[in-house]
Image (cartoon, rainbow, N blue to C red; front, side, top):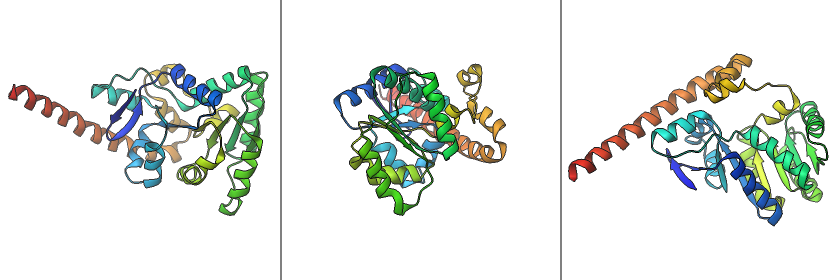
Length: 254
């Protein structure tokens, strides 16, 4: 079920429900584009047209971030659970190993990419990759890379490229790649490669994974989270107040 939260579409799906839709896309060869929405992405959509189009035109907008979960619930939207991008990617790699689907990895540094593939093959025996390509290429190389990806005929494509490069790439090539399931995975290759560790489970469930990221990379992550979290809190507060005022007006009118 799709709802609107702070002017942004969100799909109220569990991890398993999302995985089922991805598998259906691969089985039926039905083009499906998944986006994982977190607080930073929601805030940045307001000033980045490409990012906003990428989210709004996606077939599935997953809720990746406890801030979105709590904020939506505060406004009366019944979000079943958080579906993190890395959890979904790993679940789908497991399914690929079982159903003989062939994923393609695009993005990250070459060393990270290679280690991620080795680790994935070790975790899920039987997993076969259609191919891979690091994320460092020029605009002039794009067409050849797209042709190379198309030639491998993957069942799913996981893209670990930064914003706005990923959005620009997908906007230009998504409809010609001819891949059933496409998903942006942020820094998930780094996690799979073991270059970045995830927060402990208790911190994830408490919505403090962002704090763990700040601890790991304070210079890069501190301002990003401080800035977007403050803006998000303001947006949510205004929406909550407006919702309460509408409720009072309706109650008074009756």
